[in-house]
Image (tube, rainbow over all chains, first blue to last red; front, side):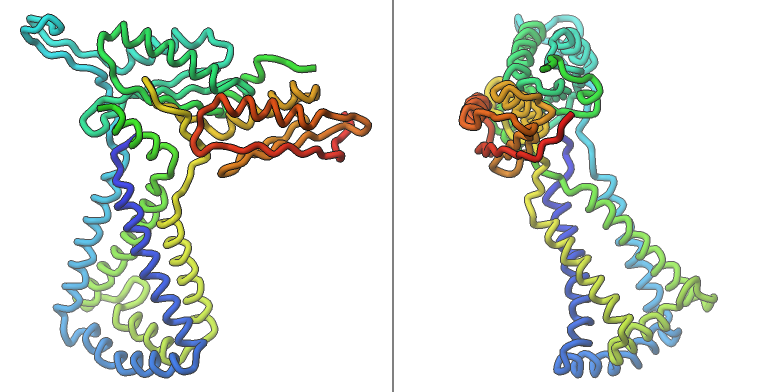
Length: 202
Length: 190
């Protein structure tokens, strides 16, 4: 439900994997295939002299540039890591002050996502198919989406669970006076396991 | 308006975001880069190295490549395998073991485990055995229903197959599931 950039995740993992694959595979192939080994070892021994000269103090600026480049990359990586997981919001609906009949005058209205949590808990807790309900609000592409996680009881029919949730959503719609997108996930977590079966078959 | 959002949400919630592996790889990379930066600064200032000076480290790698030793080859193979795993992970769809159960007013996603538990119950009722003796595993496009019969019991396999199919027909799930009912005679006596 978050705004994490999935393409970027995959691209990043792919690129790192590709570099490791090529580097590791290159060295391994160089060692195991005689023809390639000659080329690799020649190139490596040719490069050994100049690189150790360059890094051993004759040209100090190379070391500083290396350090700087590493730090810049670290900053980029940290920004990439921190870019994950945003999108959850506590505000479900904001109706601002306006002249129309469907808008309040003299003040704006904010509905918190906790209201939805309580309404859905109340509406669904009596259902014998449902162990518990979690509700969270997310901002997806500029729209607020309600996510209802239904922990169904062991052996409950997903169709029946869905029917009760849809009924609760209709009640919620009329309560709110506005249709917000609702995403429902029916899961069977540890809570469902502990709560046991609603019916016993001998 | 909501159709686009719903299809996006269903796609995102039924597939892995690959966030965990990306974050782990980024963290490891950042730590390695931090070490390189520290070693470079120490070498530039003429201080003793933490683990290995950059010049020595690069020289060691290049020497190893020009005269390959067993340990180096083994290490290279490990690195290549890790790289291959990362490439595969980045390209595979990464299904999360849940499937879409239709979109109208709401978009619904159902865990495969919920479906499996329900089908165990359905098959148990239809075959007149305890749901505990029905093992259901939900795969990509098919469901395996195994009835573990106690010795001496018989079961209406076709009837079970029919009722499981009927149950699944009401689900409207994508990817759809085809049931396959089997009877196992090795069921335990309880």
